[in-house]
Amino acid sequence: MQTMTDTPSRGEITRQNIKKVAHDLFIKQGYHGTSMRQIANAANLALSGLYNHFPGKEDVFREVFLQFHPYQEVIPALSEAQGDSIEEILRDAMNRMITALQNRPQFLNLMFIEIIEMNSIHANELFARIFPVLTHIANDIYQKHQDRLRPISIPIFVRSFMGLFFSYFITELIFSPRAPVSSTQNALDQMLNIYMHGVLNQPTE
Amino acid sequence: MQTMTDTPSRGEITRQNIKKVAHDLFIKQGYHGTSMRQIANAANLALSGLYNHFPGKEDVFREVFLQFHPYQEVIPALSEAQGDSIEEILRDAMNRMITALQNRPQFLNLMFIEIIEMNSIHANELFARIFPVLTHIANDIYQKHQDRLRPISIPIFVRSFMGLFFSYFITELIFSPRAPVSSTQNALDQMLNIYMHGVLNQPTE
DNA sequence: CCTACCGATCGGTAGG
DNA sequence: CCTACCGATCGGTAGG
Image 1 (tube, rainbow over the protein chains, first blue to last red):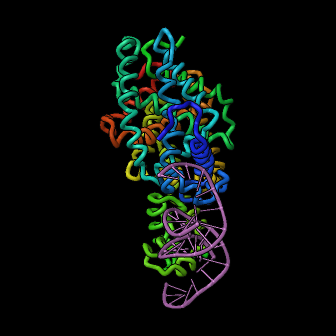
Image 2: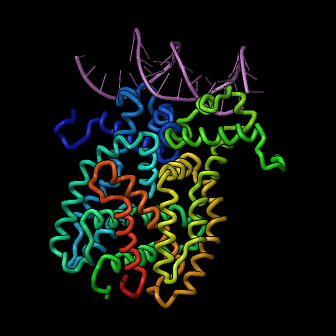
């Protein structure tokens, strides 16, 4: 029920604001740990004002999840990755993905909450849409640069690449509070180096 | 308040049973999604019977978390890893770690729940104890086999190795419900191959 | 007829 | 280890 104009209606502004504050509360407290009253308060609404915009709590979470899911950053990063060699393309893609999400590593929390408290129902639905796109991009790169890749199947190519993405953020989450990890960009470069050396059949520089 | 005998007391049996059923409920529903009444019912206790064993809900979770945390499997796997070359040792270590946890991939849920709903307080405390052990093991391997490793700092060596561990389970969690991932052991072997090729300065086999 | 919202209250459940 | 409860708060809805 969106208007045709590009200036959002008063209702749409409120709706966007609800999603923003709900996102911030969910990633800090989880789904069951956040009450509709907290969301309403944070959005400067009465509780029943909140119910004018969303039929229920699950609907709020669903929209928050879809709007703030990392695929919003990951797919564009992969599509726009540039470089002459496969090495440059992969490095550029990973750097774009991680740079885009560095400012809000809480995207992991959102995914975790959905897995645990929503039983991955939205994630599975979303992934069914994303996976073909992922495979298509991987196929393009694979066909063009197969000669420089070690013998790796496409599924493992996709899985290991996305695995590096998660590997980086999860170990950052676990190691960084205490351990003497090297500075962020440095660590990413080194982990990328290991990966590139692992998938390419010619030594990196 | 443990007895000296090796046959657990009646109270200890009840206590262990509570932790078992609580674990099963927490990993399915999360912390805030699980009530003390549910735990009591599953343990065939009245609600206040549960409170005879644990002062509160957070204490139940804390003990469940510490008892079922993957470090219980990861540290032994690393310590007992065997092989003549560093390649064999690393492969054996990762295979032991993953085999030990393959039967209950829900350990990820437990970690996610703790991160989100407990703000990582137990995880940080635990990791402060584990990290020195991890670094010590890594140091031993590093000193003995440095000539076969590409120039990688110890922190990155540890981080990338643990990263592969998480990479495997997280992508399994995300990809396996829909995507045509290769069979599990096959995928692990291939991801391990990429990693070994990435960290070693001589080609694998 | 619409939107955006209110104060008050519903039946049940939370941890204790 | 139980029955019987508590203060408060939960997600959701009433009429206006």
